[in-house]
Amino acid sequence: MALRDKTVLLTGASGGIGSALCDALVATGTRVIAVGRNEPALAALAQRHEAGRVTPLAADLSSAEGRTRVIDLARRLSPSPSVVILAHAQSAFGLFEDQSPARLEQLFDTNLVAPVLLIHDLLPILKQHERATVAAIGSTFGSLAFPGFSAYSASKFGLRGLMEGLSREYADTGLRFQYLAPRATRTAFNSEAVNSLNRAMKVAQDEPAAVAAQLISAIEQERPRMQLGWPEKLFARLNGAFPSLIDRNLKAQLSLIRRHARP
Ligand SMILES: NC(=O)c1ccc[n+]([C@@H]2O[C@H](COP(=O)([O-])OP(=O)(O)OC[C@H]3O[C@@H](n4cnc5c(N)ncnc54)[C@H](OP(=O)(O)O)[C@@H]3O)[C@@H](O)[C@H]2O)c1
Image (cartoon, rainbow, N blue to C red; front, side, top):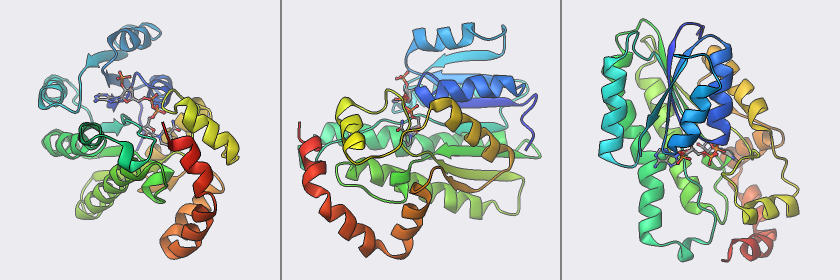
């Protein structure tokens, strides 16, 4: 799908990958509706582009009120959005037993319930276009559940299931659903504990601008799914075909992971 002159609804726009995506989208000639909660960050993002290119919209997507604000604006826009990129999420590194029920609820409301309900309410708008796409930004942990990230992994597995189901449900229409998964990326998403674990496990980290460029290219090519990075591509596939291999490998690293995951 050619992105030029399209209206793009982008969530997570105030974040590391989201703001890099916003810059790359403007460079391809799109108009971006930039959604996040951090109003000063959204205003700064809008200001670094030509007037009218980036429209900031502050909304907490874990709430019905926040989602309604997004849908209302999408309905009023002309041209309405034909590209939706869901790049918002919260991280939750720690042992499952240490995470409070309130924190777990917030995580699933943001990472999974919000995409389900936003997509549901955006469908009538998207279906007005001959071609439209929804790209959800997943994670390696949406294909390979990782100790210390059990709930986060579950939220991304759910997101992957949603996008795969919808891409099959709408396969004979002009609507596309994409699940695009970065590997570890250098943004504020990762706490110092996560960065320290990544260093100890020699996990490579990508720069947000490089990730954004690959995501934009996957959206233009309408790829239904993509895992970024090597060896993450291989591990994600191995986990699908031979999960006991990954079980064994992660069991050997469990004490290291536990040491970083304990508060
Ligand atoms: N960084 C990584 O290592 C990594 C790896 C794999 C996948 N990913 C995925 O990549 C995507 C972007 O991550 P990132 O690294 O850019 O993270 P980030 O810098 O922490 O940005 C997260 C974004 O999500 C928004 N957000 C969080 N909760 C929200 C809520 N309740 N309502 C509305 N917006 C909310 C934040 O908005 P405010 O700041 O305005 O609150 C921010 O714009 C996420 O889906 C993440 O799961 C990241």
